[in-house]
Image 1 (cartoon, rainbow, N blue to C red):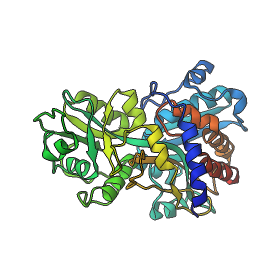
Image 2 (image 1 turned 45 degrees about the horizontal axis):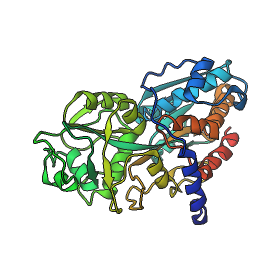
Image 3 (image 1 turned 90 degrees about the vertical axis):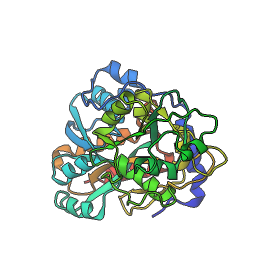
Image 4 (image 1 turned 180 degrees about the vertical axis):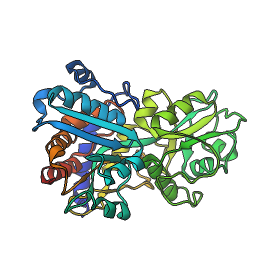
Length: 378
């Protein structure tokens, strides 16, 4: 099943309308403790209680992607304020860990920045009695190439150059390839400190998916949650990577826009082949999301993203975080709360609330498809 071509214009309009009110990110970390007070919900810009249908209540456990931690924090605050009988607990640890816990039956949903692989779907059938794990797009975002280079405020990179930096083929900031993309910029004669994720990460999977498509062959590894490039340093989670870049001079890494903004990190513009480099903004990412196609079937809404886009104003390194759930065979004690929570998170109010944190609200045409699947979960 794919999004209809004649819906692309409407999808783009919906995406742009939703991101039109985005502001710079407020506070957010990998700390999963969240206040459920009404003041916290109000401060986050989340939905008032009257807009959230609480269901029967109960405990809901989730784990996985650190890319969506800041979004989950916003949603937990709003949902907790509205639904005092429900407890939402979300542990980070990365997409790989989340999928593993889901397939072990330890959590009701997993956050993953990449869709389930066939082997993971097969494994999910052991815990989804009579069904299987499906991918529900919930958090749109972009991956910023963040840098901390002495006396450099703006930087332009492209696919081949990023690939060579993260594979230790380019090791100095004043390398001719970087200099050619940044005329007039005084790049230091200093070693590049490249930092990657140490944990299995959907953010890594999306970055390497981009490099595989847009590096002109410079990145010779397949897209994967597990880092394969040569050399460099590593850090755990989006928060760990952000902290490293902030502390280490002449460093470069990749994190979600939410973390780049929260930690006041500079983001490189990407030369995609369009008329001018594309800045790492939610609006530019929305242009790319507007043309995403659904690759899954039935209740599975896995997306196909165009990392090699050359469209004007389309930021290419995007990611979507899926909430992975059972289409059938969910645990009875948490199903009602699961459906209630997901119904809120994909609502206009839920999506707009995380827009203020540097995320990209899902285009209306896509969120409507997710909204149609949630009531069918059993």
